[in-house]
Length: 264
Length: 266
Image 1 (cartoon, chains in turn yellow, green):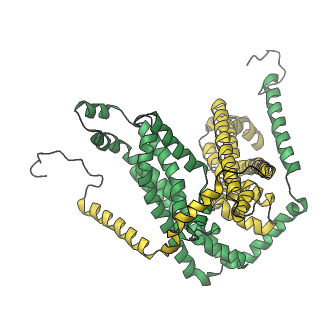
Image 2: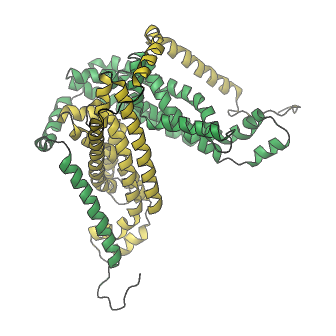
Image 3: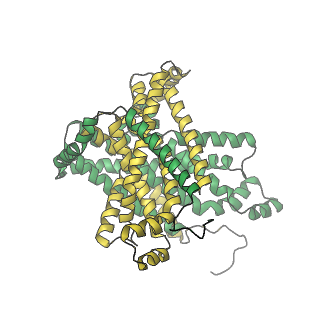
């Protein structure tokens, strides 16, 4: 800091100029190197525009000719979502108690946290492809996948909520000599109930979305219908399915938002 | 609660509350029963599922590391897909966020255009985008990068737009009062206020994209998913478990990096 400059200049986010330019240079070098070495088939990609034109020509207007296939696929997705949300909630509650550091002993806590981390880390599509191989094509694989997916999300947030409860009530009921289950039912559940219901509704919405995706690898529901339509170059039917999926997602998002707002 | 003083025992709910609770439980049970009864599932398979799963698990251990070099190469490719796609999407989402935020959008029409872009990008999942772009550009990384980009624009644009809506309007009024041009207002009034949120959102999306790009390969759009699909199709279960372990490591490392970076910024 010697002489003050005449003009004010915006302070930089990173003070040290050396670090700043090193960072810029690093980002640039990374981009140039990776884009240069990526195995990209530019010739094939250049055909893209023409192909895109053909696909969009085939897709318009969307065809609702086989709407019974569409409806049955969608209903299957809905059933998968309902079953997976219920099953996921039922499994998430004990798991959340296991993974809450304020009520469970250390070894059980680590077991619960570990299960949640593993359930969260794998994308539902990967889980789905494993379940499809293990239990065969169809909605069963989809429901199992989404149960795992629900556990990863619901159990994590529920465990965090349990860790935030007011412990005074627990101590009071314990001091009155209540056994473990009564303590849980009369002190912990009333405190976490609103969050639990909110999470359940959110998860139903989220499972409906995900069931459209896991179907693409064969786990039933509207996703399977979509993947089939795409595989047969039925782009007009595929567009109709996509429109229905988007519409359903928007509606379910709105409904779940309204219900959660009224509950909380 | 209007508890009568002569009540013999304490109860948590009034009779009316209890009826409401039983009613909602009943509706819930009915819905689940409908779903369970009408879903197209062969129930013998369900009872068989645990045995099948343990059998599969048995065949997966121990993981087979012979293919580790090519797995790691694919993981590097996966990271690149996620990073480049996030990088491009961040820039593309800036104008969208600008027109989709109520306080900066030029007029109502642009507001609706912005919202339309956000909603259509967000409601189509990455995998569905990938299906489309694989059909357009052919199997490969390009389809993957573009698919992730398309999905990310909606996410980034929405959150960034919300951040813009929450800014303090006073610096902007001050700048406008001094006669600053629109460009300068954005640069000196808005950008500094949303900068931390901008970086936090971008890093969060990078973390999500890392996860999503692990599955792109399953529809042919590059990355580790291709190796996974190949190993599953040839029943190389020990290689499958190796791939799954590397994905697990990748995702956990990504999450650790993104949480520490976001903590530093906010």
